[in-house]
Structures are given as structure tokens and as C-alpha cells.
Image (cartoon, rainbow, N blue to C red):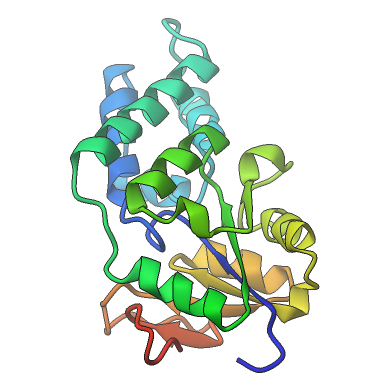
Length: 212
């Protein structure tokens, strides 16, 4: 895209296929603590940070055995175990990012995932060396759809928000990009039936021939 200087990626579901691991880990850990996870509540927690999810379930079904921080770390540890042992790769993500860098674009990452989880995920995806700036909502007052993590990443990249492209797979993430004043690309990971009215462009799969 003309006049753009940076591309900022979300992480889960965009550069590594790990979203279902979070759902599995949260179901296992919170259920073991007596939490009754309803489908409607799980839809609400999907866009939250791990800390926010833990607090949400504790408020509804308080437990006495572990602190909120301990439970949050239990969830993260379980997801890490799954990432290390299960297939979680997204096709062509490395060549795609390398192509963007050759075009002179800076590359950032902005995720709701905790910072301790980021390096493990990017190493597993084989792309940790490609990012110029990395940010976690863990260090912001609010996670997505609040734009803070995207604005922080743009600042680290030394690029104004309007010159940034955001690649996201969730509506809340796209809202965050829009709220930051950035151009939003919806990534569907091959699902051509998915559409997002909020997005400026749709990207079904990564390719060095046609990137959006």
C-alpha cells in the first residue's frame, strides 16, 4: 500500500495458530477449579487478556485454592506445553514477512497475550528475528479493543499511526486497530467465507505474490 511504513501483526491466529490452545487450556484449568464455562461467557472472554479472563471467572465462581496470578500462570504454562508439542504453524508466514521487509516496511507485533508467552510463540513459528518492535497488552491499562497496544507499537517503530497497517483475525483486534487510526487488514487463514465489514481489506492467506 502506498504511503505506509509499517505492518503490525496480532499474534494468536495471525502468525501462529494457537487460539484453540488458549480455549483448551482455559477449559481444563478453570473447570478443575469448579468454574462452569458457558458458551456465551466463553465468547465474552475470547477477546480478553489472560489476566482479565482469570479475574472474570473468579468473580463468577470464586475459588480458594490458588491466587489469581497462580491460576493465570497455570493457563499460560498449559498453552506453552501445547505449543511446544502440537502443530501450530500458519503457512507462508515467514516468507510473507520477509517480503514486507524487502519492501522497506517495519514489522511490529501487538498482542493481548502476556509478554512471557510471546518469545516462545515466535520462536516456535520461526519468525522471532523478523520483528522490529513487540508489545503486549499486559503493560497497558486495557487490552484490545482499546488501541493502546497498537499505539505503543507504532511509537516503538517511530511510525505515525496513519502510516501503519494492522493484520488481525478478530473483531475486537480490528476495533483496536481502527481506534488507533490505522489501516486494518482482516486475516482469515484460508477461510474465504469469512468477511469483516470493519476491515479495510481482507487477506485469506499469506503469499509473496499478492499480499492484499
